[in-house]
Image (cartoon, rainbow, N blue to C red; front, top):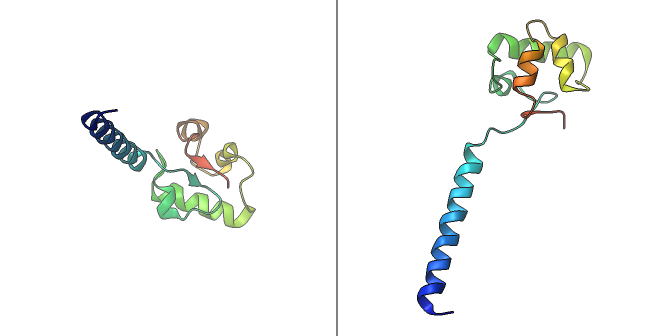
Length: 92
């Protein structure tokens, strides 16, 4: 491999690595509904401060969630909200 080609490959690899880190930083992070604070829960689509506090209160009264679908037991949270956030909700 000649020097120009090597440099070109290194520059391309560096640019791709930089782009990957930007994409990863912009990707929404998972939210653990069993440990998240109300401030963290508002990051979920459709969850404002009141719903976030209701999730925390439910968890304090009933213990940890066993499944994401169990969020529908929290007043004001329906199946559509759970489905909209399914890929961001974690229990671990």
